[in-house]
Image (cartoon, rainbow, N blue to C red; front, side, top):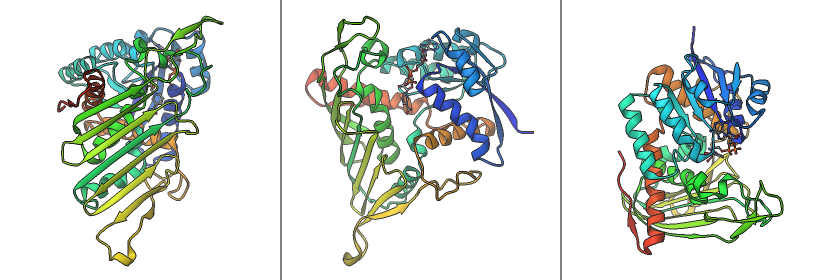
Length: 378
Ligand SMILES: NC(=O)c1ccc[n+]([C@@H]2O[C@H](COP(=O)([O-])OP(=O)(O)OC[C@H]3O[C@@H](n4cnc5c(N)ncnc54)[C@H](O)[C@@H]3O)[C@@H](O)[C@H]2O)c1
């Protein structure tokens, strides 16, 4: 019989729901399945949220005390879906309890905390994966393979944009995402980990960065004090120019004030032999350009990557259109599959610390006004 993997989730907000959906979908999407995901327990501090998770998602039990879940002998995996600053105490307790950990990005609120967590996880010998679901879209799995096979040749340019528009409205109140103490930063800490992870996944680390940040709306209504306004202490937009460690240059831009954008994650790679382009709002296709083709045949091609996952993926069928939630299902399948096979999961906390190292260097560059080095993370 397939090994049961018992999941204890901490935080049942937006991402808690999506992770629960993904765990429930795995047995329907993958067959045969080398493990059986079990929704063993859930904790959320908001009154009623854990009970709702039990009713909605089918967790066996719910509590408002996350320590009970982390320390429960009935839990193998701790899945952390709380706001950023609340990851740290849960991470520390889960490592101390010897649990495998699946943690939402960013791992922590700064590089130093993230390094300490990686060191503790290594000492404890636990399995760990950071949520970087976009790596698991077929278009980006294919992009990585093409870069590794030399399709683009030497990389000249990487360009990554992640644009949201949720904070264009000045009447949007201050939630935890707009408070530095809860996040460690603004949009760079929020959307930055995704675009940095994909840069590293496709073309490797940056060696040096020059960063800029900007806040457009400095005061907003306070959610918990009707009629009162509060100061926003994080940035709405960030940009960085990069020198890539393997050669070539790059840029990243992230914003939550990109009017008109929905979930606009765009990536472009240009190299000596070819180019690649991807847009998350058009996720069924990877655009490729082969500069070695005869001139009359050159031009961007649209590869149908759609929902083409390798076995044991059986559903939805490969031709059906793909989306954000399917990437989460694939990321969680990869994590639990690695645990079942006793392999180290990827992307791990090493990748999470590397993302923090880039973010930290960008913030240092904003403060110093000059380019800053990104330390190598291994
Ligand atoms: N991978 C992605 O695509 C993606 C997308 C959005 C958010 N995120 C990340 O997921 C995390 C959660 O974001 P969200 O949008 O779900 O937030 P959210 O505000 O919707 O949900 C957070 C939940 O955690 C609960 N909570 C807070 N502190 C807690 C604690 N100490 N113990 C138990 N429960 C606690 C809250 O009551 C809430 O229900 C963040 O780190 C965020 O950066 C990732």
